[in-house]
Image 1 (cartoon, rainbow, N blue to C red):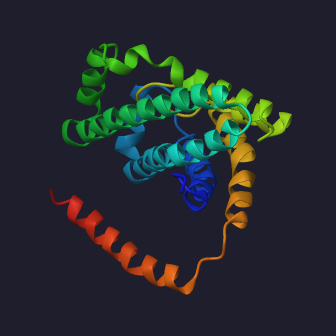
Image 2: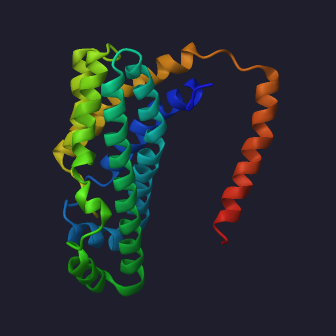
Length: 231
């Protein structure tokens, strides 16, 4: 059995890009740099929390989508698949790290106010950490994945270019939306959502036993999710 399987990989290829696009568009009304982002958090807390949460969720879901694409590339171009998988996955880890810092800044804005939160972020913005040395993966990995997808025949040239556009997305903490952000996430949807739908259609029809098993599993995972917030 491959992991992720076609159900997980296909669903991730549909949900991940759409969540990233939704998060990108939701924060697009506000200026790009972190002082304006924090001001928007104070003035529109619900919208900004939803936008950043959607982007984070899409980023996390994309690991399975990328892993599935890497499997497809690996059938014809195993070296390109290996390099692309490593680079893009590390880049996804880095964006998840940034999202943790974003959350801390949101919390500081809520408890300290915009001015003090902005000063706090400004003082530590350039501090070095592990991912400071790996920032290139956030952008470069998508170019490698797109080239590998084209060379292996997984994607045609147009959709491969659309996938590579994801490498244009700005990186860093508390980054808002620019035109290239929208181009990148729309390109990701164009490249991967049809592939995800096709992958899901190719999967065998779930049996009644599969469905009956999935229901208690879903309920149990939901309960664990609630319990996790109490720890």
